[in-house]
Length: 85
Image (cartoon, rainbow, N blue to C red; front, side, top):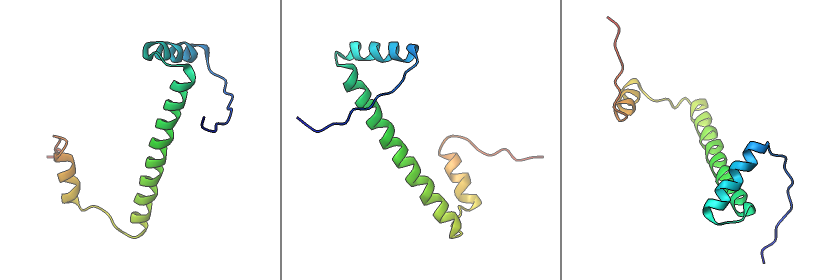
């Protein structure tokens, strides 16, 4: 058995109901669902914080995208910049 720590949290009743429905739908214990959710959240936040730090570091070094690079990035999403006039 792996080591684990006990963590107690207070949940709004509506969130607990949703959590229990997910656990029942997956045929898994509530604890399993909470652990998966926390793992996903921590991974996403860790990635996001690293990307923000990377961007801030690049900005401090004066590394900015050119206007053409920005236009190309937006074009990749199917959007183009509207020009005034």
